[in-house]
Amino acid sequence: MCRGRGPVAGACGVALRAGVVRDDAGAAGRPAHADRRRNQLAVAVFGDFPALPDSRRTLSHLLFTEPYLRELHRTGWARAAREHVAHLRVLLGRYRGDSGLAAHIDHMRELSADFARMWAEHPVAQVRNRTYVLHHPVVGELTLHGELVALPDEPSCCGLDLFAAEPGSASEQALRQLGSR
Image (cartoon, rainbow, N blue to C red; front, side, top):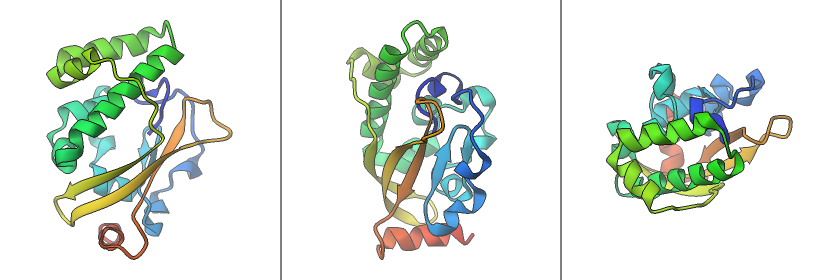
């Protein structure tokens, strides 16, 4: 997912090359998303982001208002949500005076009591890699390792979130199953 100014509108404001997130990238067992695009495997794992109304296509909205994502993360939801809020604080420092980002944060504070509580705790962190244990409704438990990868020819606000399972693991088999649907 695009990072930087992206959380404001859900996109970083630049057109990413078509090959950055290809629909068939999931065939290799790697869910991926950048800007407003996700490959088919990312949609199968994390939900149909493109089907959401444009105004709700932000990670903030997904984490704090979509019950599916909260259930997907289960006990790991609080950590994922806190990491996201902490990342927004980094962005607020990086893009001082960005009225869109400030408006997004204010909107989320009004929309979600959980967001408002976490924001009031003042976490600050830029998370580039993480491990999620997800509880997928079709394939069960998935352990995915995520990495935010900078795109060399794109502005610093854009990145590609790549997720992978340990080779040979049950999670890898589950991703293959999701990819073949």
